[in-house]
Structure formats: C-alpha cells, structure tokens
Image 1: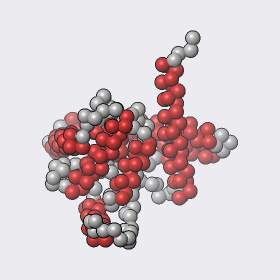
Image 2: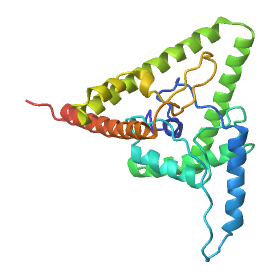
Image 3: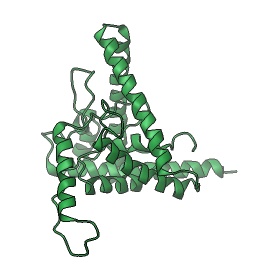
Image 4: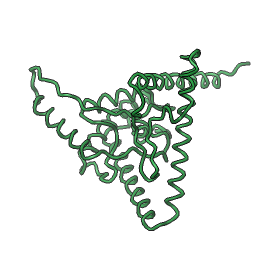
Length: 269
C-alpha cells in the first residue's frame, strides 16, 4: 500500500481525524458500551441463526457521525458505507477503547476493527487492484497501531504527572492545530455557501465565523480531547443546512482536485 491509504489511515478518516497528530476521539463511555452490548443481545434473540421467518426490527441507537473531511484516497461513499454498517451493528460512533487496546479483551474494539478492516479490504481490492491484502493482516496492523497509541497516551500522562514541560508544549501545539483546522473548515464552508447562497449576506456572514459553525466543543482544559457536538443554540434547520454544506464542500473539493490533477497531467500549450 502507498502512503496515506493504509488501514490505519482508513480508520483515522472514519473517525474524522485530519492528520496523524490530530486529537483522537474520546473512547466510548460505559453507557455506550452497555448500549451496544444490549443491542447485540437483542439482535441475537430476535434474529436466530438460519431463521427464514420475518423477525421484528430493533430500534437503532442514536448515531453520532464524525466530521466530513476530504481525503486524497478515500471517498465520501466509503465513509457512508462504513457508517451504515456501524449503525446496523448498534454502535453510537466510531472510536476505540484506547485504554484497553487489545482486540481480544474489548468487544467494542473487536467489533469496530471487524467493520473497519472489512470495509478497508473492500476499498483496497477495488481501488488498489491488489489481491494481497486480507482482513486478518489488516486487523494485525490495526492492533499494533492501537497498542502503540495506548503506549504514547500513557507516556504523555506520566510526563504530565511528573510536571515535565513536554506535556504543555505538545498539548498547546494540538490546540493550535485544532484552531487552524476549525478556521480552514469555516473557510471551506464559506466558499461553498457563497456558491449556493450568493444573495444572502446574513447567512454568508454566519459561515465565516469558526465559532458559529464549529462542531467541536471548546474546553479550557486542553488535555481533554475535543468532543464533536451539535451546538445547543443551533436550530434543527440550521444544523441540516450545515450538514448539507459539509456534504457539498466535500463534493466540490473532490471535483476541484480532479480538475487540478487533469491540468497537471495535460498542461495547456
């Protein structure tokens, strides 16, 4: 696999991480884990194996989709397919139990890895035209990454506990990176909104403000990973508009990249 399209890159994309050093999403809460376990038990109870009779459906839990991001390799359709499978398996969002990284010790991590690796292999077979990748190999790579991530987080916590300067510098850098990302997201949304609503200055002004459209919670403690939320002040209608703008932004970005690639491949004489 070339750089940028590994199963780890795929997992990061599905979780809404824009770069290798972007804060990872918080691990699932106890309530989320129990909700998923209860869903699995209920599913097995009403969908027995090899049953040909119609079975009642199970209410799906609320699902919190990560932010939509552009990626040079993976498409929005890849993310939508993956999200739908997570929903069908009773998950509330895509994340891992970072403090319990072994796939054999965490049912949440094991189920998450299964879905991510299955979908990544489908992508790899279709886009990389290779037959050398497999789900077991992908899970092994993902497991190694989870173990390394847990070790890094433990090291940072220990250094912060000992009062070393490392923690302040690194976490301040992450805070700056998040602010840069928020500004870039607002700029992208504004350009898209300008194309769709050129004669609505009030709405355009709203999309120029990172705080007005940010999907991330502001916290004073920068050691706390940001949680994606829908601002309480934002109406359902505006939330749907922002969501639609996000989708359009991703689609426009993909089209712009395709045009740039074409111009580079076939420069004008």
